[in-house]
Amino acid sequence: MKHTQGEKLFYNLNYIFLLIIGLSCLLPIVHIFAMSLSDKHALMSGTVSFWPVDFSLDGYKALFKESPIVQDFTNSLIITVVGTFLNMVFTILAAYPLSKRYFIGRSFYSFAIIFTLIFSAGLIPTYLLVQKLGLINSYGALWLPGLITVYNLLVLRTFFEGLPEELEEASRIDGCSEWRLIIQIVLPLSLPVLAALTLFYGVGHWNAFVNVLIYINDSSKLNLAVLVQQMIQNQSLLQELTNTQPELAAAITPEGVKAAGIIVITLPMLIVYPFLQRFFVKGVLIGAVKG
Image (cartoon, rainbow, N blue to C red; front, side):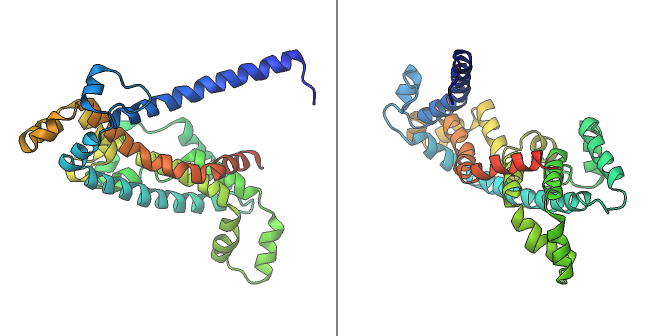
């Protein structure tokens, strides 16, 4: 197909615009990664750009020796895995009946759910509710208030509505129960959209920050995001390291340790995302367009 001069100009401008957006996202990560692997003197002289200068792992050594990063990493993993599992179970259980025309009260429940998308309770009422439920200082405070995200529910409901009704009727004629229909037929056909929603929920839990600061008081239950924030705010890690291992403390800078912490918190999502990316695009598009 031959494009006109105007179309070529439009496409080229689009490519340039997308390239700028992509680089603005990618280059800061590359710079932080280079800082985390650079020597103290290179960091202090400001010569590090997008490639490590005088390769050094001292920032990572200090991070793993003196900070509770292993414990916080485990906490982040628990918050993410359990939270995502609960999110997916309840989102499926809510979306499936809402996708069926014969479900009594379907319109009312759909309206009530969408209403919360526009008007939410706000921070203080939510905090009081969590407090009354006795969830302060427990991970339940992170999981229960956001058990179902309305946007994800609507995407999954729309996907379920697009599945052929004949498939469901044929399964029932063969004696298939409702639970067996969902587990053995509906869910396997919904893998792309389920993978996309799992990624949405997983990233949200992994990067949980404000809710952890509000609801969790026990330092042994904090996650990686809060640890990195504390590292950026104060110099306690460097002071502890100076007392216990002065040689290692002399070989690092606060910027190097902060960069190492940011890479540690970012790396798991960077590893997981390429495997789910093809499901991510396909799942969201199918769930959003069908019906």
